[in-house]
Amino acid sequence: MAVHVIDGLELNVDRGPNWLFVKLRDKKTSRAKVPQIAEKLWSISSRHFIYRLVVELDELENVPSSWMEELAELQQRLAECGGALRLCGMSPECEETVSNQLEGTLTNHATRAEAVMGSGEFAVLPR
Image (cartoon, rainbow, N blue to C red):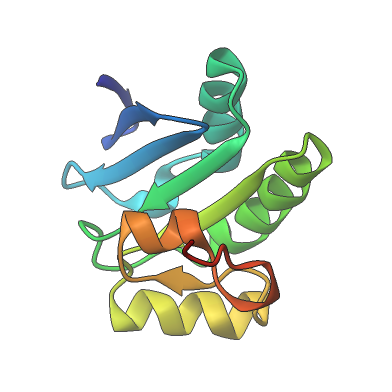
């Protein structure tokens, strides 16, 4: 597992088959100060040549509203490479922020496994 720290936010990167899992951990700093979170996630994804990314948010109390547009742009950038962006483990407050600002383009999944499986019309059905 690789660990990256940017302005007090720790990103723990775990590589799985065809997916990267990035767990965000707060190191007791204002996350609003973390610049260009999407660019950092893109850099990590590009470095591994894996464009399917699950961002685990279960250790964050809230997600700064400034991240919403960045995450939407990152999702589009990953999709252009045949990839995907999925979020999981958000608190109810985080989930409300995301759904209000992104209007359903990014949804919360309860677990890493559910995020990989997806939801809606693109969900992977068990065999």
